[in-house]
Image 1 (cartoon, rainbow, N blue to C red):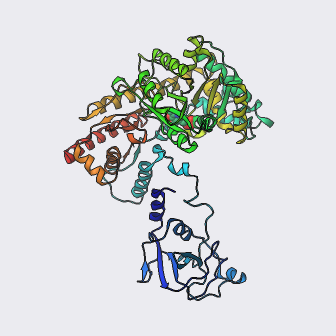
Image 2: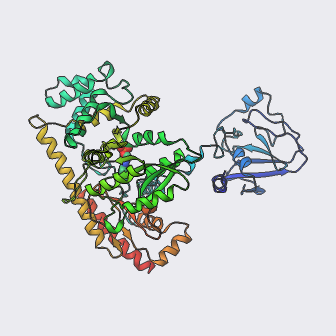
Amino acid sequence: MSKSRGSGAAARTTQYVLLLLHRGGGGGGGSGCCCSNTSGSPSTATAIVSRRCATAPSRSIVNNDKFDRRSSSTLLSSASSCSSQRQQQRGIGNDSSDNRRGRVVMTGGTRIIIRDAATQCAPAQKVLTMDNVYDNLVKMEYAVRGPLLIRALEIEKELQKGVKKPFKEVIKANIGDAHAMGQKPITFLRQVLVLALNPQLLEDPSYPEDAKERARAILGGCKGCSIGSYTESAGIDVVRRHAAKYIEERDGGIPSHHQNIILSNGASDGIKAFLKLFNGRLNGKPTGVMIPIPQYPLYSATISEFGLQQCGYYLDEDNKWGLDVDELERAYQAAKTNSNPRVLVVINPGNPTGQVLTRENIENIVRFAHKNKLFLLADEVYQDNVYDKDSAFYSFKRVMTEMGEPYCHMELASFMSISKGYMGECGLRGGYAEIINMDPKVMAILMKSISATLCPTAVGQAAMDVVVNPPRQGEPSYEAFLNEKKSILSSLAERSRLVVDTLNSIPGYKVNPAMGAMYVFPRVEIPEKAIKAAKAAGQTPDTFYAFQLLEATGICVIPGSGFSQKPNTYHFRTTILPQKEKLKSMLSILKEFHLKFLKEYS
Ligand SMILES: Cc1ncc(COP(=O)(O)O)c(C=O)c1O
């Protein structure tokens, strides 16, 4: 147990009050629930720990830091209810009146009775405590839903309660959740889902025939013709086949096999299932996973959770967040000292940086991965989100296949999601992975591993089916579908330009051109005085800046440190997702805030 965890737990438990009653000799200790232990004589050195209450006697010791870490967390676990009647039935309660209904624990020669003041009932020892909860999960961080969002939600509640603030609403520009920011669902996609969920409507003439045909195909692939049944672990067969066809069309006819497609609960689930394959240590060293810096925090979080080794390579901010192979080489050599680098993660288009890799860049990355025997993980969830007229999305699969021998045999896992693109269906949790050139025996292990969680959500799979099998020319829904898709994508493109241009007009801001994805990652010059203030507040300068912004304006962005960034540079990530008018007003408030911030801290 690290020191910081210990002190954290102690801090969390300061609401408990320790009443020191009297000192004495040794005596019986105890453990377990309130109903299990009262041994020892009344003369034993005894204290009662009770939950803080307004009537705490004057001899209370509020600070429990004097306890050793283990005993304090044991002591301070609380059981909610346990009647004195039940205690008596178990022969308990015949101790002195002070320790009745209390659990007795020994610490440093002092006998402690724990009492929950609210229930007048002693707490039970928890099986799972901060001492024994899985360490890697304690270390794991996920900034996108971290402290900034927690505070933003609190502020929202304060506003609801009528607390006066210099703003009327919180603008959550922290997460790529398009529907939450007002984007409307694609009609055809929802029609197919409605029909699959309520097949009676297949008789309803108001639904278009192509939507009915899609719903019938999905239901035909479901056991008992119901979307409420478990599906195969890798997903509904027909959806996998549609995904393979979609990939083939996307990649100019390069074959894709449905056996290589695994459907998942969003891309996150698939990425985690894949990375789990690398959990084992080789020659005592963990697998090194090379990830871009800045990165999407799913990667750092999963790497922490699984005990893998994060090996960051810096994206080149001065070159539109491009990926430089020399930097990959540097990071790879550095990674070799404490890990076995085996995976190279590339996010294209990038999150949080929004870059779209050129074909040439991808070719160089493929060569690098081949030379160093790395499994390529291509996170391509933003493949529909390319806004720059001079850029295009090239899949890693296409590039490495077209590069021919030996690259076309490289191992690759590519991920796609229904949460991004034009559909933005984050809550339905749909995604797929196409995994190629994996050893078939390992693929069987992966299949076995995902089968333990039965299957991804069938509704998410149905939504994915629409994405990979959209209305075709000549079908009744084609025009409307295409219009909705185009309108969302062009609005995103317009909003991304608006954000970049406005932010670049703010003194001290520097932003790369908007190329793709759903985010902008401006670099902000933070004055020395503000850096000192951040230090005094125990925050990184970018976190300090983001909190100041949130408290002053209600705008919630995520500080660059949540994604990692080069030392002594400060950024934040904002989405481009608020609808246009709201985005405009957000940007002007942001500008005003920054100018005031500069004045205050210059
Ligand atoms: C780069 C990247 N990969 C994966 C994901 C996960 O998406 P999903 O909602 O499909 O799990 C996200 C979500 O924001 C992302 O930005």
